[in-house]
Image (cartoon, rainbow, N blue to C red; front, top):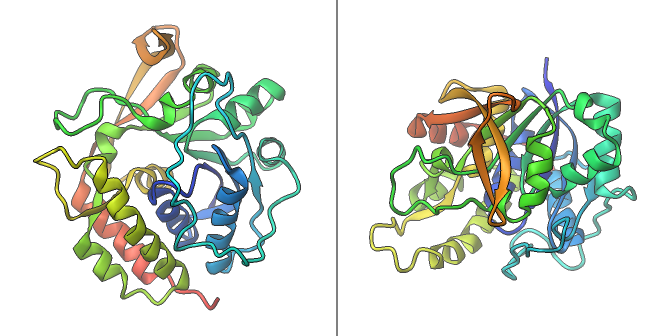
Length: 310
């Protein structure tokens, strides 16, 4: 039986969110019930998500625009200016849910008790929990992409991870709420990526959705390459890391991942999110290793094999 899933995402900046949405609709194991978006221009992010769903023939999946700023307004979300390019045209007629994203999340969770996949800042989830505490018990499981736990010695690995640090206060609310949680951190996702050769192979897909995601990857490639311009050992042929698709895959096919369980408390130290050992903390399941070639081959097979009539 397919797993009911709600995806909470900041789709539109890094292309990996779009790849994750494509994987969700290409996977029969996932029954996508709703998408909520977070961070900055959520109306545009919502339109991006809706366009991808419509290209997949899944226009009935509701998309809700959620929280625009970090909950305490002490931080800033990332906005690079290319968001929507290659996906959404100004004259695309795309209807978002009239319900605010937080309320759509609450309603969907309370009614359908889905597995929640968070692949962006945790602001929507934190506000939902604070607004309706019953959400905590109604979430069947939470899988999120986020955090750095020190298991990857790659010198190019950023010391902090964006999703959990861009709204660290929200992250502490969610991670300490007691929801059964799986964390797929940057240490592991950093090992998974598409190269230019992979992108060329993806162009063989007949799906309009996958072709649009390829267009978005072409736009993202030079943008993300600028982040590593001063890093001599960085591979210039990496088109996109696969952070969010790997987190989504942990929901329904864990064969390429290895996990450990640890009791960690999310806390703020010098206004930065930190994890500290705490025997009384809710246990977290943390991905600690990945068979990267196997995962990339799996993802490629799903996307190339996806066909739709739109």
